[in-house]
Image (cartoon, rainbow, N blue to C red; front, side):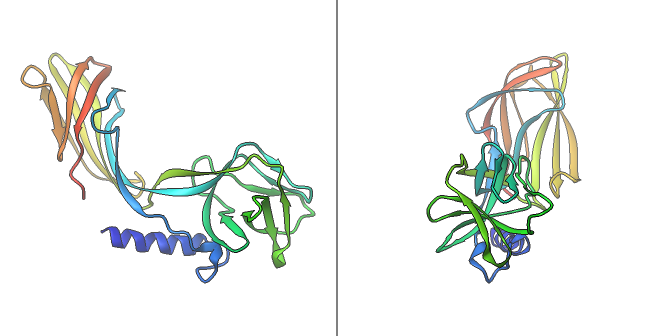
Length: 229
């Protein structure tokens, strides 16, 4: 499964690349990993409708974070946000121009500027916007930094336990499995647990310890994650 996901990431990188997979501008590939939230042993709180535990496939991606809008002298402006890394070569590191993530930045231009092709940090750590024929505007007076962010993979499978409230000594939990970034519910089941019998609840390999529960809120600790699929 991980090999198939890696191939999908490579294909996605080719699709969103600025020049193509033959160029070093679009050679960056992130490695997928399974992540559960919250971590094992951590105490957490949730309200009705909140997820108690989620598990999905994520990738850690390097990204350029522009901390405040930055305007170049030739009419280009980088808005505040993240620009995903796509590759590098001897001239510097390249970042995605049109972002597809929350808090993604964008390149804006005035009506007299040429179409842009890439955003980069050159080998001198200057922030640049490159236009046609490799003409670029650069500045060292910027506050952009490179960070690593965790992002979900498209077409991912996510498992989740959702709090549905408490009646008497019994609490209700929903187990939900979704595909395609939560666009489609693949499976859902409601489960009732009697806390007078056990403070531990779970489903699909996941195990939680209930510390306190009321109708609107639950406090709990993760003991074990879902079985990986």
